Image 1 (cartoon, rainbow, N blue to C red):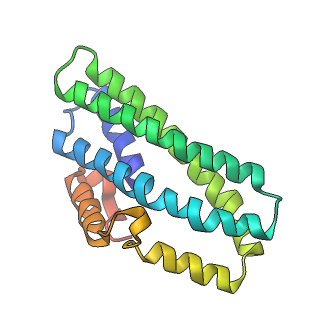
Image 2 (cartoon, one colour; image 1 turned 60 degrees about the horizontal axis):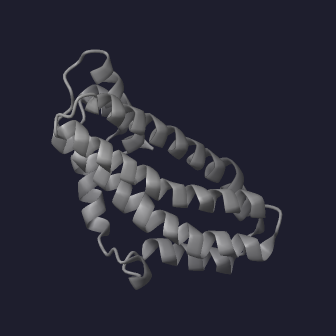
Length: 179
């Protein structure tokens, strides 16, 4: 959420006539949202959290199906974001506007997605999942070396996140660093 909000801030600042952000920052942000939530976090939700909740109750099947649909849609939105960033960086006429629209669409979808998970699915999981379920889920999320997810780089993501925060203007991150 911090990275997505930061990206929205940078787009808004640029629209308001302030200097555009460094291309390296935009590239790092897009890489982070592509690699971490899309390739690592969401597949683990789909493989561990969602099936366990479905085993315990059918009450949230529709919500889980919607979240899975959003995961699939997220891949398409990231592709759009990458393409729009490439066109903007290449100096294509109207490139910033296309990139800004892609950012707004992506950010809105991500915030909606996170709200659904935090307000509906996580409380349901707390209610229905067993201690054994949580042990398995916690282990899966802590074990990024799982070959099914082909990413073994917790430290790389931490370093990339820190780099992103360090590239943001101070007023964007304020006291958020380390929190």
